[in-house]
Image (tube, rainbow, N blue to C red; front, side, top):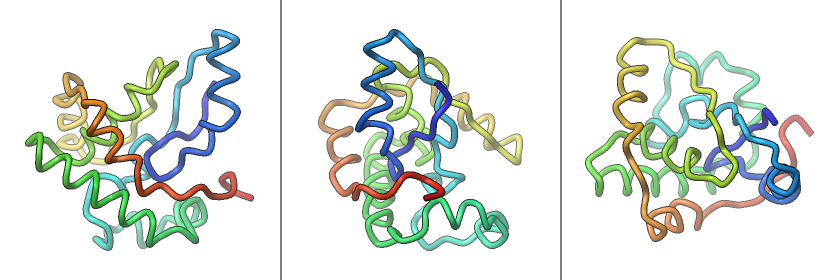
Length: 142
């Protein structure tokens, strides 16, 4: 199942992920770093955030809650001495049923960062902290 799963969009946890687990269907989530939003502190603008209309639509309406989640990612990243992207991706990789997250990058150093974080395993307490500020939302695009 190819679905969107990341720390600021977790709606698939309600029905689709449990169904996939029950039926033995693996998950290959897209946008595990939320189009870069989980790779940098909240409010930091990039060329992508300025021009990505689809990304704005995906994450509209929950910016304050998302900023709290992003702050938690930054806190855990600082704690473990890793990048925010590595922490966000580690959380996705540890979700039951996830086989291979689909990651994107626009620069070779981003790819190198992702690769160097494949050994990161979060504790249950760290995962709980990352998940605590999440606010449920309507499914993407609705």
